[in-house]
Amino acid sequence: MASNERSEEKPRSGGAGDRGATGGLVASLGVGAAVLAITVGLVVGLNGGEGGVEEKGEESAPAANTAAAPDNGGNGGNDSTDGAGATPPTDEEQQAKLDKLAADIAKKNNVQVGVAILGQEGPLHAGTLNAESAWSTIKAPIAGAVEEKLRYAEAHHQSAPRAAMEADMDAAIHYSDNDAAFRLWMYLGDWSDRTASHKIQDYLKRTGDPTAPGKEYDEGKYVGFGGLTWKLTDQVRFMDGFRCMNGSDKVLERMEHITPEHSYGLSKIKGSQFKGGWGPEDDGRFIYRQLGLVPGKDGEMTPVAIMAIPNDGLEPTSWAGVDALAKGLPDLLDGAPTAKTKADC
Image 1 (spheres, one colour):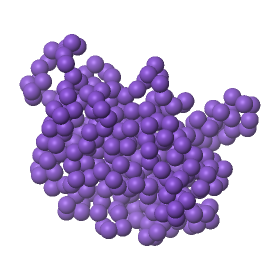
Image 2 (cartoon, one colour):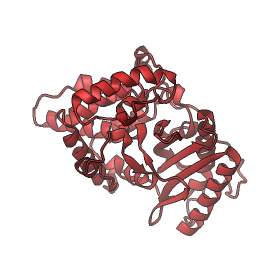
Image 3 (cartoon, one colour):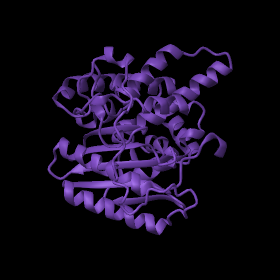
Image 4 (cartoon, one colour):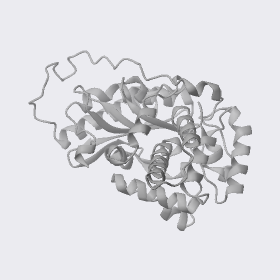
């Protein structure tokens, strides 16, 4: 069975489960402490949260995101013409629509929300949420950095545990398995949390994301990689540059085949490549967040990041919130800048 997200992510409070497979990771300040945190989380996590129970035997047959794209009716302010020569919306126009989407969903769904997309001059953001714990969304860059390390070792004829790391990347992305993600983290850092945190910081920086887990570690603020504060706006920067990274295609392919148990939010948009993270914060708030690439009408991929915290504290309320955000995104993203491709890097 998969361990819960909280066990690896935030051992400072003893752990609490994340719903589904396992949503975030905490590499403790030492390997022994991390293993202890995972053990505690396995017990506590059965009570709910992102780290529900997932049989490993199912990992060999992940289901693709086959949900139909939202039906926008063809008359929601955007005509159904091709629009190839249309002038792209300005950031001011996009911001106004983004603000309205966030406000409407917060009111109708009893949630606090945050949503970020890419604008002409950088990320645009709306809602009351932006800087919160990464939870299992951090597994995307961890997997990317591990794939990069494997390829470097192989190119230099060095020993590389390809088969084991492939299996762990499958489990960490498809099912959000925390034990698998912890092994990826330890491999990345040569069994050092500090080394891993600095390697992830370097990896994020090369995508255009200024988030600094290495700095947090050195300053003594580090409690685990899933507990890293990761802004929605910085997640958009990361997803914008992710396809420039060597081996990211393998991670993105996995992100298009998330287990149906986690079929909320961006999974409702056919063809999305995404990773979610969720769980209870120490102050009792339940967070559900996602980052990803969403296909537009022309098939190009646009970076987005969304988050919901239910005012009533109930997980289903947060799921409804991210579902509503995803439903409103396609019209909003029509004409928005697309993520960099290899040709742009």
